[in-house]
Image (cartoon, rainbow, N blue to C red; front, top):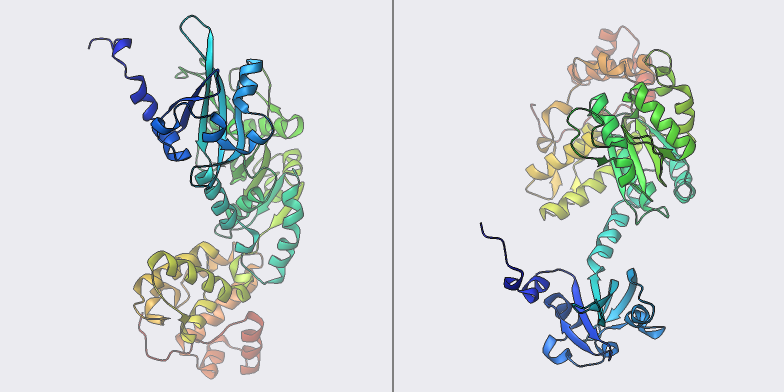
Length: 455
């Protein structure tokens, strides 16, 4: 293929293909050129803007103090990423970031300046949407254990303390990490996630800290790690209990000294990054048998948050149902207004091994099937109606396995006997009084089916 001749390049076509606005002015401070993006942003065509004063066309808040291009022309220093607000021809205000550079001819003589304008309104809208999605109000719950978490979050978000979030899968650990970041002074910087349980040991250490060319076979070029990508922001280390000893040592050094080294490089790199970690494992008990470092554990839990499983905050289930119902109504353009009492009892009785994530999936399933205004039992997944036979295995993962087994056993026998309390008590070999006491203690509610439903 023939090399492209510079004379064949249509400079104006190239500039018109850019998403950023480009404005050039002469030494007389008059506009000489606008590209297409600048025309859209400023509201002027390049024909009508040509030879107009720059201050008339690019009307921004910075002009009230000192013209950015004039600063560049007088000092010969470029201005980078200056955020301001401009008013376009129609009077609409637009948030922008601006870069200015000198414009020189082929002999190197300054003949004017160039202003590159980026519309930040969409970026700001996205950031606002993120802040809304991850606001503390979206962490739903009235349970007393969740209220303790809510009380901690506003002040915690303001700090740079390392946070360890503990809880079973599906309890909302990542949502909480996002909320801490989005409500912190670091909100406009990156939120970078690393799932420590999804990578091999070698890949994880390279992904986290990066490497230089030649650090290992196949390293044909250098790569920065996610720790560097999170500069100024937050690094979220999910499932941190799976870190191998070598990665633990490097992470501990960073948390202690705020610097690290890329793989294969002896030069330390400083980084301003807040670390939020999460785990579903009991790290304290994993220190000896699994080999998790005690000193790293102490560093990670400068502030520790324990998220309770959904089965231990059943009073939050109706609130979460309404929250998910509203969300899926919006997404699917439906108008489901309520949950049938029988359906609610089924949802309250289920133990949710997948926690909030599983409840969200169940409500989505129900909203897809429901064609009316009320969620009925026939809209719910069949496998949540009765206790599964593997409940002993599930109970072993609970804080109080004996209590969990008892609750599941009582509920299963009640379900099998059609909620005949006399027969259920006989099968459990306890009195009806003891059965009633267990039902109240475990918070078991009887589904009140309006119509027969055979799962």
